[in-house]
Length: 235
Image (tube, rainbow, N blue to C red):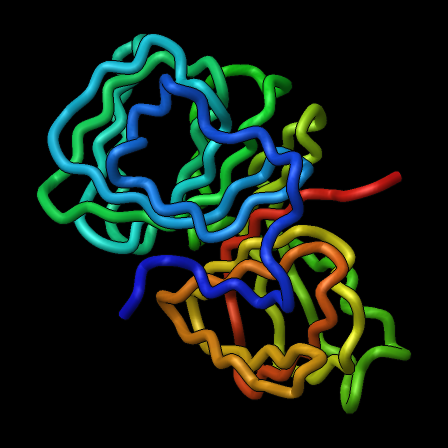
């Protein structure tokens, strides 16, 4: 199974994106599969060993897909992140990162200069979820789903949000994607279809990125839970 996110798009990312800085501690093992003008980059990374980071150079959401990360913060706390778990490292965070051999993760990173306050935020799969709005009824084919979510992280400067979401099965018609979104499926599966009519099934343990404006239809026939990373675009 590939650890790089699937990109559902009919074109590559737009020009004008700010790239990762020369201080990126994971540059040697980083693969960017999409980047866009909103200073967002998506892809996968591989790292093993240990590194001390005085100030993390960007804000990054990591979904560990293999191995294990241990994050040690300056105040003495240690956060172990196993395969299937997720965490946000905000720009400016001082920490030590240790990775077991073969560790890989999918990422969604805000590479711009603006960012939230330094720190790390876990995205627990068992977070307490609250009822959230389903898609508009005029876009639904069949019963309106019951949706729940827990937003764990918000960065107003980069317009980035991350958390956990789940839903009962539903079908949604083709419509332009209203945000940039990385989804990592925790439970269940979903079939996404672009305007070319080609269905892409995304299963538990896999990630998919849908850029803003990309036409996309949704079809899930079972309970689905996901990690989401959303970036608002436009006004």
